[in-house]
Amino acid sequence: MFRVGIVGCGGIAQVHAAVLDRLEEARLAACADIVPERAAEMAERAGARAYGSLEEMLAAEKLDAVHLCTPHYLHAPMAEKAAEAGVAVLTEKPPAISREQWETLEKAAKKAPIGVCLQNRYNPNVQEARRLMESGAYGSVLGARAFVTWQRDASYYTDSPWRGAWATEGGSALINQAVHTLDLLVMLLGKPEAAAGSMSNRHLKNVIETEDTVEACLTLGGHPALFYASTAYAANAPVLLDIQMERAVLRLEGEEMEIRRAEGVERRTFSQPETLGKGYWGNGHFPCIRDFYRCLALGTPYPNRLETARDTVMLMLDLYDQGRKALESR
Ligand SMILES: NC(=O)c1ccc[n+]([C@@H]2O[C@H](COP(=O)([O-])OP(=O)(O)OC[C@H]3O[C@@H](n4cnc5c(N)ncnc54)[C@H](O)[C@@H]3O)[C@@H](O)[C@H]2O)c1
Picture 1: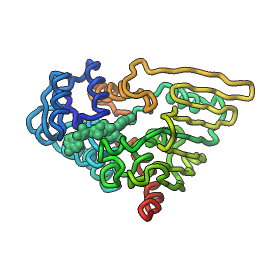
Picture 2: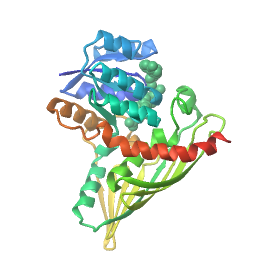
Picture 3: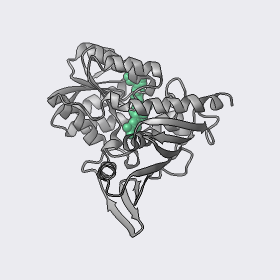
Picture 4: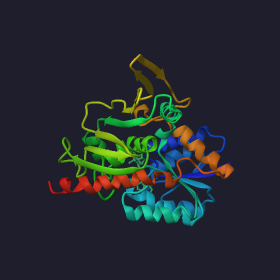
């Protein structure tokens, strides 16, 4: 059984710990946080040992893998340290907040396996959409559009001060909330070829320096794709993703799928067998983490290995290059 450590025992780490608790392949042996009570509380629940830092944990424990559940700017340097120690890494998204950090990760991935928690790739309706697109049942793909309209108020940022700052979060609505949907567009349509976008901050101007809204016109695998994400909405509405095909529109909304054709609309409901965390994020943490350990055990390539996130991360950084200046000159 793999011995696992979690670094950063805040919000999402609770989902990682709950998944590890249910897995036969791995168990939580250690956890680390700069806030001692957070590490202690998680350690006590799991029968694990608590540490004040990744470095202390790596020095004291013989671990097979670490999960990085820390603020964004720490993922790449922490992955580098763990890989240096020969420990496999499963990092929360985003894996990097800059191109320099991405290069660090690519080097680290030569020393130890690195996976990225992009759990929405495991959503059953996304997998079914992919199968239908590949089957050619509805002709070729013509394009896609995606909407992420969620709510993040001032307290979301003031409660965890690393959020809302370029240096520590690296952006907001895109890098934190909508990166999953951008990644699905890339996964389903293909390699980014062109991107023109803009960013704005419409409702939390005095709270965050980063964006709460991003829009972009993309070309992915030769197909046009429109992308809109904002955290200035009134609620966390289900993500909406339309794939326009020659003879149908595949509409993914939350866990549902509609196949819209001239003959009528077919509705299909999917759900994850194990749901942990908040549904609107995507419930795929369980299969995403389980698969990481199954691949590690078998020595097979993990579907969410670092290199599979490259196109999404580069596209995201490109959109920040375009959008950040307008926000900084406010
Ligand atoms: N995949 C998803 O759907 C999903 C959902 C939520 C959050 N996340 C990601 O998870 C990560 C954490 O987000 P969160 O909402 O849990 O944040 P959070 O602020 O609740 O937790 C972060 C934790 O990291 C700890 N920390 C900070 N610096 C540290 C250091 N140097 N060493 C050890 N611990 C340190 C903090 O004390 C805190 O407990 C982010 O990358 C976020 O994008 C992913």
